[in-house]
Amino acid sequence: MGIVSVAVFSDADRAALHVRLADEAFRAGPAPSRESYLRIDKLMEIARHAGCDALHPGYGFLAENPELARACASNNIAFIGPSPEAMERLGSKTAARQLAARAGVPMVPGTKEPIENLNGAGTIARKLGYPVLLKAVAGGGGKGMRAVSADAEMGAAWRDAASEAQNAFGDARLYLEKYVDRPRHIEIQILGDAHGRIVHLGERECSVQRRHQKVIEESPSPIMTPDLRRAMGEAAVRLAKDAGYVNAGTVEFLVDAQRNFYFLEVNTRLQVEHPVTEMVTGLDLVKLQIRVAAGEPLPFSQDQVKLSGHAVECRLYAEDPANQFFPSPGTILSRRAPSGPGIRLDDGVYEGFTVSTEYDPMLGKLISWGEDRAEAIARLRRGLAEYSVTGIKTNAELLLGILRDPEFLGGEIYTRWLDERLPRLLSGMQTQERDAIAEDAAILAALLHSLDGKDAAATNGAATETESRWKREGRFEQIDRSE
Image (cartoon, rainbow, N blue to C red; front, side, top):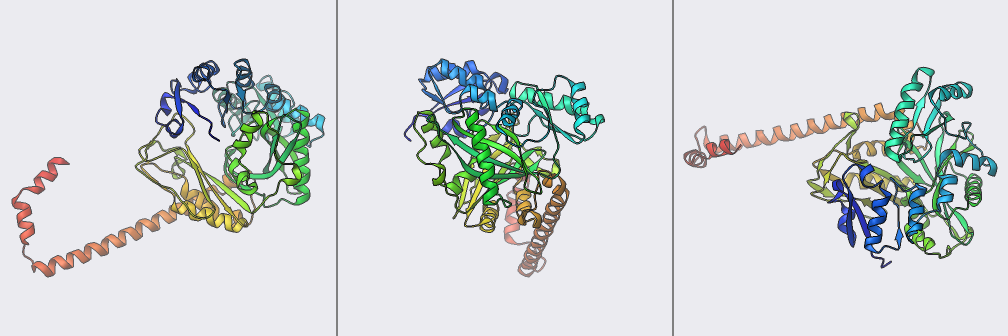
């Protein structure tokens, strides 16, 4: 678009790819996010110094914080997102539930206000009936969320969820909702302009999750029908209109086995999985965000939104699934990116980049598009097989295992599917690793046997001239000393 870009970075991100790609980059502070990326005053200082006239908040940190939007307005900077008032109506999970109830959108039973204390959480949970979910009022991404199946678990779950929410979003408040058995997580992408037009861009299925963190997303959903898409899309648009929503956002729903859908929450920002929507609609959501923030009307109506083919996205992490998913920090020694028809890689690393432990260990997102779901999955498997980084461990093999799993291929997924399926998937990975090691050992043994045969044939038991010269020049000793 020809727009000069200004990046911010913490000390931990000084060598990050976004810093290298931006036209200008400024230090926001030390590595801890509360001293850098969560400091609105520092961000505004940088924006004023650089002469910025707009700010895109990204995916996390302050992306759903209305105070950042207000600070932008106070400094005559366009915020590329919804108004602070719309954020407060929808970004707060409890406020969004209240608005959804008034708009007649089906909801999961639960509280409409933040819970004051642990005792109150226990009382409400017993009234609703276990299992329940504790969830952060602010933020998303599975942070500040804990499933609770009995009174005995509530205390630890409350403390952990509140602490995680405070660290991630600066807001420790929690609310509670009934846990729906084996639901599918399906979200509707919405987009609105300042001229009263709001449309939806179809759905994304995000049911493959580990501990409430999305792992694989796709569009369209394997269970979607035209009638269900229409009903969910209309509910999402109705809610957005009642909130006076402008710019991009996502309305999230749970869908049960009977295809009944229930409002979950609204993400008042762009989401990590937005590329799957871009792939099936042919639209550039970030470009549309910028144009809407500049006051332009949306260039299409709901009837003009067409979905084509199927897209799947997987999240590549620097972690070791075989070791309890521990983060795998370190320097990337080599990197090979996949390519070919229908493949897109959105990542933020490069050869020589050091993955730290300061932030989320996601390396990037690999997205595929195909004429249908089977082709999209096949292309994504090919892309994962081509993808390679050395120096750190990644979850690429686990992702391949998921994409080969018969239940996933059959679309038989739900929000706890991966958590329940994980032991079998990890066992399959270990078997493949053992087979690979055995194959490598067999190849090495055959090679050594071949070399031994050649040596024996060449020397008939005597030392060769090469060996004698090597020994005479003392190279064994040199090697030993260097080691």
